[in-house]
Length: 282
Image (cartoon, rainbow, N blue to C red; front, side, top):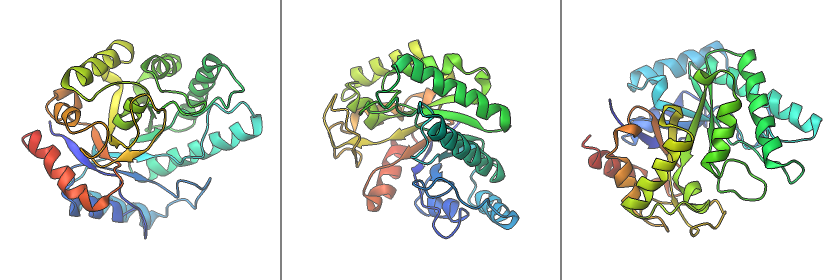
């Protein structure tokens, strides 16, 4: 089994450009949006769009398990307002259909915010119930919830909160978790040392379990430990440093899932990819 490392690439000009862009950077995996991330809706892919994407994916020697699509940022499954929640649900289901049309099997999603209008417990239940509803409406796509930096009323900054969502999702085969290293650090996990990152993932195994880990976002952080501010930095150039990323690339638990780089300087992506794969011996 290999390490699937690569950046979050643009779908500008058509989704089929994403595999080409990732391969050109030396990536062995990648992330992508399926539409503009700050719009609610987009026209569904045509048959030609889907065929071109499938052809490019195969041509560049990627499979669906090496790709982690990301849902738009407007979706908030914890929103207590009925109309706003319905809009989020419609957008989520639409994005799941877009993934299925492209032959992709996962959709990465931020859990959402309680907006200081619900208790965290009630908001986590609302998220899980929303995921249950969505999973019943479309087959073949797993919802992958992402940890957060804990800013404002955002859910998912602790492994206990992620576990609470997973626990309440009925179809355990179609729920997963994506761990973002910058979000971990900003949420208070001190992963700057080998001992620290090992301790953090021991806690992940205890509360969530590696069987639910479907992907990661490998990002350094501009902001400090426990800042609760989500600001990504290039690997090794932020507050975290290279040590935890080198540890990750030596652990078998992180093989076979997309390890997506979301760092701000795209000119450094080829070097970041090469360094990570070199550590892994690939």
